[in-house]
Length: 490
Image (tube, rainbow, N blue to C red; front, side, top):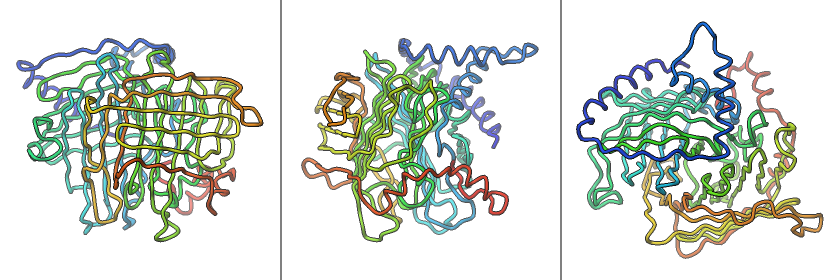
């Protein structure tokens, strides 16, 4: 899929935005986030530059874009693509989440995109759009019912939407290039974005160099939290982290205030399925640990319906830790061991483990104990921490996006990881209470009455199937000549 039309729109929009706002712009520049992982980006950039044709020397920005895309391909995860099956009339949604952290200022920005029911003409929730949480704390949301204006690649992290007024957003280069310009009339004064928290114009131009996908460093085998069954409509909604850690350089401009940044931590994930999000969920994400610049953690838990068993619900959860090239995943199911190249790290582990939590707004306590490793996550925030409400998919086939989610970008998180012996005793401390004050802590759905104490246990008739060594990509390639693209999204 080519996004040349978006590139042209991007250039024109950026010129228009720059000329209109130059006189009133206030600049803020984030200092470069110097980190050990930046050396990885330099090596990737050097490799890409050396591979360039000597007869054609691209500009610095062009070289950066080539290097960033090369880095993205080196850690590309399964399910980076768009899971829509065109012309198949079924309830369907897909959403993408990108976060950038500015650690020195304790600020973050997130770009969130969605599409609903592109092949169900009479769907009440049919539409596509974007929401932006800007570094200055403002929020913008823009949607359209014209799903034909939304495009995405079936096997690449690339998407775009151009609205009928010419405004747009785009993700290109396997998730390495983000651009957009959106305006909004604002939000209701008595809503969660009142009191001046709603933005009226946001534009951005960002290059991201991915360093970790979901499964380790460059050229390591990337995996899905639910294994090969992620390709089937069984455990919906599906969830895939597409970049556990990367470095972002660029700018975001909100109502005339531009924030520029260089080599700041970046993260991305996505969801897709039939109905929407779980009925209730929590989420913890951080890849900006001051003393551990090559550390990233993502943890989540939720209550969802079981597609193959009507009226049945289950609590599900997962924890993933990237520490350098090492990767530790804790999920309540046994999966086939991934192929682990030497560069992957000697302590990589896909652990079958119950994930336990005790969560309420202000406190996130999460733990998981596998056969070989144990992880503990403690997150907190106070009323003084700024939080924002964002729209999220509802849990029904009739609802669309709704203000169901609350999150803070200034949460305090502490992460510990231990190696265990055969008896379950801790014999080595791998990570000892790594701290950050720029974690994203979130709760969503509901109802939230007091603490939610629960666990995602290893159980269920489908759980043993997850350990089977099924190569979904090979199956897809085998079936393609006769049946076409049976697994879009891989």
